[in-house]
Length: 259
Length: 258
Image (cartoon, rainbow over all chains, first blue to last red):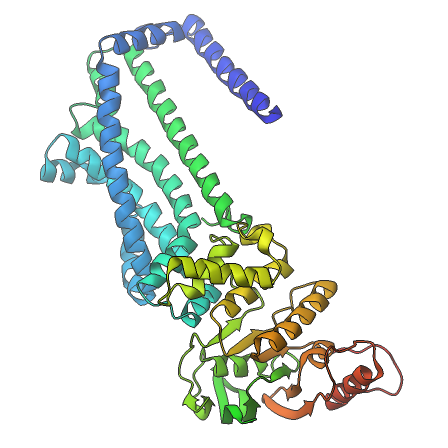
């Protein structure tokens, strides 16, 4: 209970301070109000976007793309990660390629993606898939390598064979680490969703950013940015809760460690 | 009594940093059904290697190992190993951990539950059936592992320093329990330890091993009835014999180290 009050205080004072500074800069900074809107103007812009329905539509489109891309990435990366982690000699060949691909920003792929898949939902989904794929893949592979060999000995002893070893031992054993990868991937994917929509989409939050810029509506821009941040924060909070739940069931010895 | 486990002229070599080591050299051992055997020795004497070889985790290249006339090639459900770090699955509760070994058997779910409950009761953890391993003490976790092993009704229990991570009092308690269980469940037990008192307390025969290369130095029969008294004269007499076997019986002192 004390912690809740404490974090409520932190949040209130933190954001209160930010808004005060923002207001001060807007009032006395000498910027053109059309280029640097005050908090109040941003709030009005927010109201306007909610009122004409474009914000909710944008959120809906973005979330659908996000869900599809992220889920596809998770399923693919976990399945592949389990297999590559188990057949570690194959991973030896794949790993260098992954390490080369990983630092290439998903946005660098954008021209190709637009050329190959056109404009619309698909490019944004592919960007998210790409962004979320590697964190999940890498944590899964390293998780499999770290599975306690005693578990595998126990399984062999009791006559448990493949594919049961995967379902009964390996997958549950790496789950806390996979969960860690899922959280990392969620944040990354959200960042790149908006970026992806700025280039290759006709709707969504990223598109709203570009649309606001094209209409020179700095207040809308601010409002959309705030919404993007809030949703990202909520997603992260949600998955953290899930992670806590998992580590509670997996024993403290395994919680919170890993990548 | 007839010979049950036969270890015949087994050697186990491995190469590390270009040097050849001999974990086991020309080891011969026979064990009868229902015997409690302790493999005793300092680290590096090959006692765990020998256990893993007999349990099928480490198939031998030189020599042969047979159990009940069958050559050992891989682990079997008939012979269950209990590890020092328990080997419990942390995501399963006590009940589900004990059921693990029963899941590959052709029995109904209901029967599986009942067998598991029976053995959980046997090790005194009835009230902790729905706890997860991390909620239990080390001694309780090892009890779960023992229940899990017994649930599959194996003929042999292989125990690799099972009480090594427990505090002294818990260790005594579990030693009592395992001695009791061995008698009531009629199991053959092969027990690896570096604790001289533990081996004297538990074993029918103590296999004393020495390192570099790992081999059996001598086998000491423990001709003491059960239950045993850790403070009796007989106990100390046997304890002295073991110390002597290690060449560590000084004229008059009360402290020993391995």
